[in-house]
Image 1 (tube, one colour):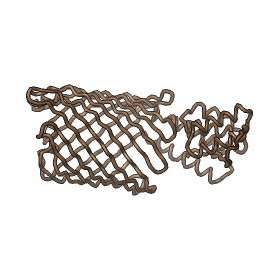
Image 2 (cartoon, rainbow, N blue to C red):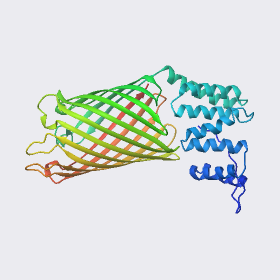
Image 3 (cartoon, helix red, strand yellow):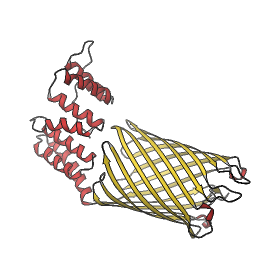
Image 4 (cartoon, rainbow, N blue to C red):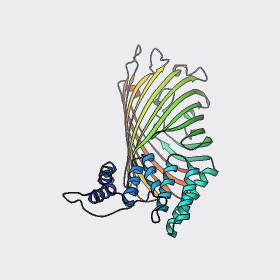
Length: 410
């Protein structure tokens, strides 16, 4: 949590540098960081040079993710008797945000050593303990297991529903390892396993194993990732597909609670058994996401374009061009409980073949809840409804899924 200095006052009709400062503080407290910076800068150019202004300039630049500017102002205050500990603390937050955890630990140590406030010293110590734990453990593990019901099972090769219903068990495991560097500038590896097994429909069981690596790099205010992933999947107890994917990811924070994410994925896909030869080809997708946090609520807006070039048959196309729009709503009811919902619309225009000119419209609605038991364990519940309309009657369907799962992050 960034520590700030605040002042309460209203802006008069004719503003002096001090009054501009007070207006900037009010705007800062309202979350209007761009406007707050304007007034703080006016106060500075107007001749105000107080430590309070310097501190708040560092704070507003931090909120705007302009870390070099933020660092410049906090460094001025490290020898100040009253603000030195806070300045060191915020410099530590900056180093942590850009992935330099070792430097962040050293700065939190200086903050703790220079603080006369015991409570503030404990806050710095908490940050130190958290970051040392990350430095000593360059890996993470994630596992989940869930039980659910599917009212209309999807047959993966055709992307069509089977008309059969069943309960199922779903498992997921992830393991990540930091091979070198930091969280934002380094080389990372990832392995995952996923499976879904049906009790009444084993013909639809599926699982996949993925191995991948990623080079991460921070450039200015952007975090980039360049990765390669290899996925092998099975369906109905036999070899299914082999996917080789190239990934480019990027994200940035426009303000402290506003984030933009981009992801470009290109996959070469081949059939592992010759039975599903018509799925051979490649797929490219571009995903654009925008996230906004307002108090206890988070909104996510997503758009995805997917292009397919598959080995279509004479009667069926497997090369859709897809446009998907998504809206996510998350509300943190307490420190332990989260509820939310997802609304997704997908339009699929399939490549025309001799006896088919298929266009689909799919709507999906999901309700979900999550309860955090402790720092490791979580319990989640989801209810999903999907409705697919198609120009080809055989592909029209509606279905719902419900599941409860347990998750652990190590």
